[in-house]
Image 1: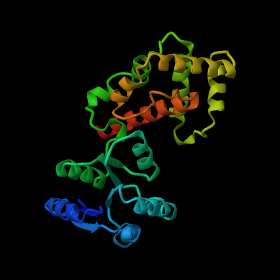
Image 2: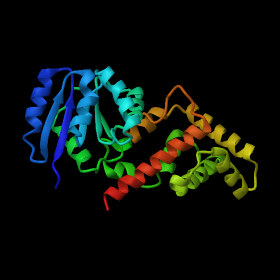
Image 3: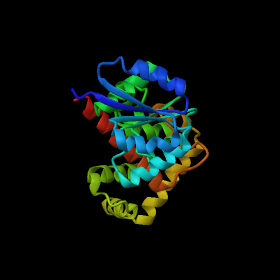
Image 4: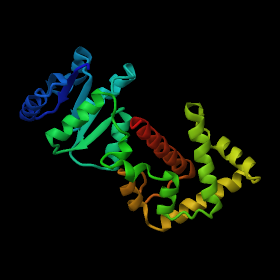
Length: 258
């Protein structure tokens, strides 16, 4: 098994020393490179080419430079782990924008950090949406049905039926999906002998009804992340693509277990 070269970046030099000493004891870690100066972060990544990079997000200049590096080297962030001082939906957005595979809220237990590093190094990280959840909680049964019923979208609603069909069409198209939701609506409308306008209207009604039920936090808890905003009703396309994302993560999670 190839050993992992690790780059650890944090402005706290003493923390770097302590973590480096702990991580080096693991036989799967080949080397731990440290960096405490923000301006040298991307230079160090390019020079050392680590297998896994861990960055504390207080290094704002380093993260900005990392965005530029990502444009030059698209694969640079594929094994990136970010450390945050607090967990929010914006944290997840930032992590995804940088191509991070994982993110943790400080203070982080060294053992938990090591587990995430080894998972990233082995290329077997579970989809982030299910972090901290057990398999039976996440993939038992129909995940789209679970989310919709938890939100209060009744299965007898035409909007529910149209939602399911949209999700099916997009997930089955794989990478071939063009991103044009109107085309998906047209296919759904043709199948159910209705109009595109009616498909969108009834999906919007189902989503609006769901948000009035006030069960968004319950669903976020079930998914292990802030998939939806409590005070912001998502648009039709946004809601559909979130369901698609969850379905694909479930499939990826199941594949890791086979």
